[in-house]
Image: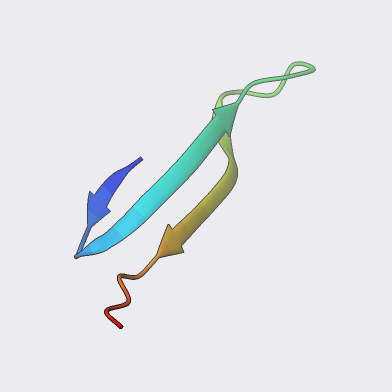
Length: 34
């Protein structure tokens, strides 16, 4: 995870069943000020 262009970025990479390491799940969340 980390900040990318001001948004929180999350990524989970996975390698399984003979496939190379690749992005499996990813998401971004933007900051909301109430």
